[in-house]
Amino acid sequence: MKYIYNSPIPEAAQTNERDRLGQKLAQAGILQEDGAIVESLSSEPADLTLSGQYRWGTEISTMLATELDELADSSLPTLPLYRRGGGYSNAGYYEIESADVEPLHANDRSVWAYTLSLKFVGKKGSYFRAIEPNRRQLDHPFGNSTSPVRVGVPTAAMKAQWYNPEDGSRAPATSIETHASAAADVDIYDLDAGETAVGVTNPLLIYAVNYPDEPPCGTRVYDTRGYSAKFTSDGIRQWQTVHSTEHDSDDSLVLSNALIRLRLDEPNATLEAEEWDDANTTWTTVGLSKPSTVDLYDVDMMDIAMARIRAQLTFDVDGSLFALNAILNRGYNEVQFTIPPNESGPIPTDLENWLDPIASASVVDPNASKTLISRTEVRR
Image 1 (cartoon, rainbow, N blue to C red):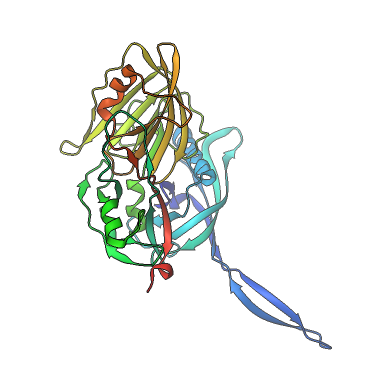
Image 2: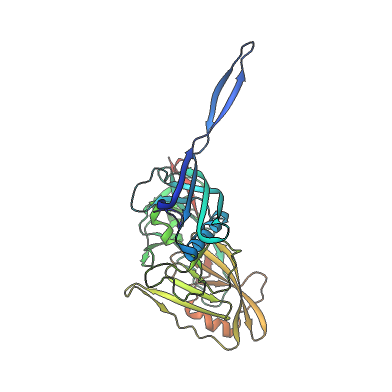
């Protein structure tokens, strides 16, 4: 099975795969001759077209087609294309230029056809993955911790280094702990240690990673589609991955980093949380005591990225509305909350007590984004 990020590309139903290497050509006319001189000026990155079908019945095919369509329109950059458990000559990092996703027949949703046009960015031999922080202060009453400021990368990653983009200095990076999640283990790094190592406030954490090893460590938003469990008893996924902040849902949403899950049930005005119990390989409910004076009023997804999720939650607190931003970072065991700039604090006491068991004490948001950095930039 091939994947673009976490969306499956079933090879058994793939109808076309075509790559193309274009060249920009310059033509200079030859005076007094019937002909031209053709000179190759530059090569464009290889384009890749993938066409295929989802043939897994109405429910599953429609869910996967919707995911792929949202992924194509999302702001997620440099998506890995890979085959799990085997080599693939076109594996690499790509941008989705365009996507056509539609039912094979207008009156039948059991089979969906797709065509993806991908722009080649590069391969892991030419790029490091990079976590780029941009620290900012949070406003909340759950604590005042300023250290460590943490970022997470897959435990499967290799050659982790702190990098100063200003002077090109590098230093080996050592994780301070490892978190075992429901999907894949995550190593935690201290940004202050990186600052000391390379002498810059927001050092980049760069690393090498195999294409299939990073998507499981990502942050996710799921549309539960009315199902209480993510998987059926047969292991078939029922929750739809959400890639767009404009996603419409009539059911509860789940924010997850595979260590903690925040279930936002707007229709029933409530919020619940679960923590991953690795020893027993199961999700356990966190004891949140919902006060009678507070209801979840609105969920506004702000960012859905590879290493963090951000949502503005509006609560009805005894007849008054209060907004609070929730941030879920990769590798974190808790949620970071902060009062939005245009909201007047403090957080109402009943709301504070409701969220306290899952709230981070840190007042520093790493505000980290995941990107690529060319080895030519890092090279001495």
